[in-house]
Image 1: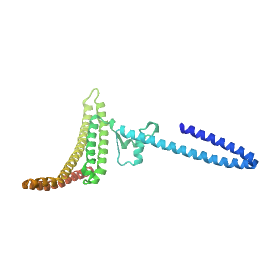
Image 2 (image 1 turned 180 degrees about the vertical axis):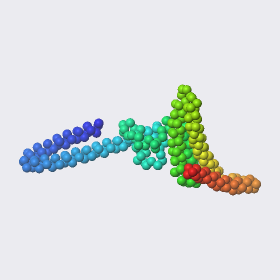
Image 3 (image 1 turned 90 degrees about the vertical axis):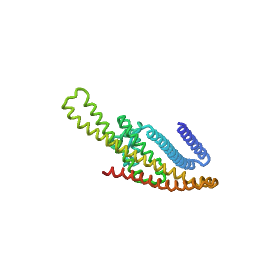
Length: 289
């Protein structure tokens, strides 16, 4: 509002300056000089208006960009959903924008590539949260930061695992709701004969998804063990201080124990990292099968 008033005042002042200048030139140089000055003044005024409009448009665009960035950040913090990791960045932004009411962006084209977590059943949400915690623990691990793990398993496979688990949980939630509706009222032997095989299939699917989540948790556990070995190695680097302490106290047996422990911990670290990598490779093989 303030900028608009400023631009209006500048425009009025510019017009007044042009009129005063034309009048002065008319009195000094006569009609020809006045006409020429008017033309020059009009060109200058047009250039000023164009520049003013450009500045205004850029200011509005920058303000819109800031507002949109804030709204997108709010969506990321408040809307819990799982998206297909194969989506492009532009498609992800389109999905985020669909949660901003003023933009009126439709989510319909991405209906099958998006899972809204609040729409899942409580049991399904709890299972998905377990899977997410396992993945986050891997991403935040020291072994990950030190690039000791399989990059494919961590950068590609884990997001895909979360997405596939979320999709299955959504289908299971819908089917469980169908089963609950079908069981309302009188349940005849014929109805039970139809529903029991469906319920068994649903139970088997739920057990399979639970097993996938447990496998992710085992992988996260192996990574945590590798982290513990890394911390042990960091502590091992301080053994020189303790050797010096034991040397001052003439404790040869203690020094030998430190050296033996150091060799054993190096092997433990290598073994823990190998086990974590093998667990990640197991996830990849299970997905392929």
